[in-house]
Every structure is written in C-alpha cells, then in structure tokens.
Image (cartoon, rainbow over all chains, first blue to last red; front, side):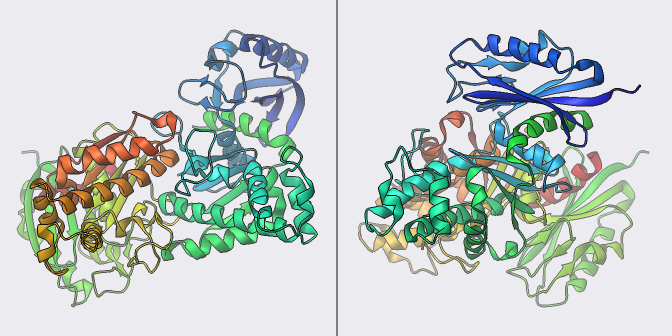
Length: 316
Length: 316
C-alpha cells in the first residue's frame, strides 16, 4: 500500500501550540494541540511535539517535512528571535527538531505562513503577486512577489504593521509612534472606540471597560447600527485603505487578502477598505486590486500555512 | 575571429534618445544619440534607431538582444503607455523593433533599468535585495527582491515616488496630493526653498525666479553654508529618510541606492537621509540598511541599465 505523503504543520502560539498532518492538496488528516508552556525551556516543548507526532500514527503516512510558524520567526536563521509573547530568548527551531527528525524542516513567522497557506490552499491559488494581511491583536503581513514569499535581506520583510501612518500617532509596542497596527488591528479598533467615546456618549459601548471591550463586541454593536461602532470601523478602514494604497505602489499586487478576527467583520470592513484604497491609489492601479477575505478556515489556517512552507520548499 | 557579444541598450527620453552596445561585463563599446522627435510618430524614431545600429559596425559584434528603457514603459506589455513627456499614445516597442531585428527585445521603465544596471555593473553587484531610487525631476524606483526586479501583477511595481507621505500635501503631477516625489526630487527641493523663503530672507536664493532656480544652484548655495539651502536639504532628507524607513519594513533590502542629479549632493544628503531613516526605522532593521550612491556614471547609466535588461533576461 502506498503511504499518503504528508507535511507536518506546527504553529507555536503564546498559549497553545497546534500541529497537524497535511496532505499535498491541503487536507488536514490528523490534528492535535498542546499548551506551549512558554515559561519552561523551549526544548521541553519540542520533546512533547516529537511525542505527539509519534502518536499520530506515522505508519500510515510518509513524512515529507516539518513546517513551523511562530511569532518573530526568521526563515533564514531558523530561529525564533526574542519572541514577544514567549519568555524564551533565541530558540533555534531547526536544531531542536533535527534531533528527532531527519527530514526537511523550515520555519517562518505566522503571517508569512498564512500567505503561503493562502497561495497553496486558499483564495490566492494561482496568484503570483499578493499581500496577505493578518488582522489580529497586531497586524502581520506576508508579501508574495513572482510566486515567492518575500523574506528580504535578513528574513524580516513584510512588516506592514510597522509602517508609520501617522506622525506622532499612537504609541506602538515596538517603541515608536503611529504604526499601522496601532490603528488597524483588534487592539487598534478598541482604542479608536475609546477615543470616539470622548466626544460622544451615544453608544452601547460606553458601558465597557478597556479590559472588557473587544473587536467582537464592537462588531456586534456595529451590526446593530451603533453610531460609534460604525464610525470606528469606518476610521479603521480609512487608515488601512490608505496604507494599502501605498503598499500597492511598491509591489503592485493582484489582491490584498485580509485574514484574522477583525477580517470577519465582512461588509462592515471590506467595501470600506476598498473604497478608501481606491480613493488614495495611484491612477495606474485604479480598479485593478482586489480586496478579498481569506479562503482558509481560521481554525485550520495556522496548520495549513506551516505545512504549506514544506510543500512550497519541496516544489522549488 | 570570435565576435564580441553585445547587448544594445536604448534609453528613450523626452528630448534625446541614446543607444549603445554593451559587453557582458558592462563596457560600452559603441555609443550614439539622436533627438527623440516626440512630435513625430514613434515608428519614425525606431526607423532611425535601426539605421544607427547598422552604422555602429555590426560586423565586429554578435548582437544578443535589445533592451529599451523609457518612461511609463511596461515590461509585460512591451508598451510605453501614455508617456508623460512624449506626445505618443501607447507605443508597442517590441512590435516596432521586431520589424528590424530577430533577437530578444525587452522593455522596462527607466528606474527599473537603472536598478538592473546597478545590480549587474554598479554598487549592487552581488546584492539580492535592494531598492534603487532615481532622484531626477521626479522620483523613480526599481525594487529588487531575491535577485529579481519586482514588476508586480501588472508590471507597474516600484512607484515609490507616488507613496503619499503627507496628507493634503503638495499637489502631484499624478493628480493626488502629498506624493513623495513632490518633496524628494529636483523639483521638490526647489518648491521647498520657495516655501522656506516665505519665512526668511537670509539667503542668496531669494534672487532667483522659480524658472531659474534649480537643485544645482541650491546645492552650490548649501556648500557655501546658505542657511535656507541647508535647511532645504535637511527637509528633503527627512521626508526621504522616513519614506525609506517605511519601504524597508516592506521588502527588507540590504541597501538603498540613490541615483540622479539630486544624489550628487553627497555629504549634504546621504548622512542625513541615513540619520532620518535610522530615527524612523523598526528596531529589527536598525543599523542594517546601507544608503549608497550609485556606482554608475550618470552619462552611461541609461545605456548600461537598458542593456542590463538583456543580460539579465539571458541569464534566467
């Protein structure tokens, strides 16, 4: 019997690590998750990962490689470099996994993995030039040019979330001010609501503390025509649309694909991002660039993206 | 006797067209120029180009291809599309030249050609990721990622000059406001001087009309410590440095290479662009990105760049 070829996709998050076995056509055949335990040494996590993979019945599968997605991960060095939500220092993922496996192992950051997953299994199938934007707590991006992910000189390309969009704007976690992700992210829209509430009380959102308010609550309020919530979405779309217009002038993508929690806002977000992008875009790009929702299930995207890294490497 | 292999480089400008025969190692072996005569049909120019090439003693050379650089040229379509300083409508350069030559012919815009010339024959030799910025009347750019020029989905990538850097800023020729090239270009610095002169009269530049003042005069004044001229360079460097910091976050280049008239300002420009870039750059990119002057002679760059397009195509 021919064994099914699979790539293992692993996504290391601040709280949980998920892993799965993914076929060449993007089917998740096995799947599991475990706590990351970021307070313990990273080697401990990779030992548990090894044990989990053993359990997932390797007999049935032919392992083609292991792709890992993680915050602050560098494709070139194979290291997670001082990750923001993990207590580790530099962690060499390739070294740690090579102790257990003698197959191709590759690492990239979560937004790049999402872009690869989108290209192999999502709405970017067949596209050679697009930008994947992940709208979560922050804003991540993976940029594809000529059918290849852009890593740049040092492996850190695609930091669209840290393009400065407002001089002396909001304080960013990176230490600077006015970064795109301080506005266009789940965290950003919460800040926007509190700013808008200073000038108007006419909103159900005034009853929430800053700890309790989140983008989902704002989304629900906007669906009920809450004025402040709608204004917050419009403001977010405006800043994001303008930033996208500038990014288009640089890499001229076929589409911008929005992924993650905030991207679920659908009609409250996409038509407005599109409108503001078109209003601010250079004439030669007008009406050429699509704004699309991701074609990946959010619960599967991390595994699919990480596994895509291997399928992509193999096809090179 | 073995004939020397050459690529023909042609640069079509608003006033003059230059062409030359370039060896694989970037030597210009023959060179000529002619008026573009943009008021006559484009076919007339290409007939003269054909005749000039015949004169340049083809017997000695083996023609490997013809590379053409022109404003608003599209690599994919092979067309110059409604060029700003030429009276032509769309001109299909590949079609027009194919009447006379049965060798590879390729077209790109002047800034992309400059980037290719830089990569093959200039300071970007061996670099895989860099951005070439041409500071002339406007601001053009050619972006190289993974050793390849970025054309994007429709062939118009690399319009860094049309990234909006100031909301409701200066009016741009593209019809929008606040584009980078309205500030960081030979034209931009002249505008800056006139803006600064509104608040201070303490400058030799106050004696010039807007028709007479140019970036060279401002450069000479700055060398003589003229306060307004120095301030104008500082302001230009600041806007350019910030825009570069944002572009770095997207493609993570090894170097930014400045080319063209304004880039001759040397110590009045480069250290300040570097300073403002570093002040505004994301921490992971700090002290990693070089700001370099072009390694191409300005008088040869257009021919070298256009010819590089062919040497680059052939090596694919």
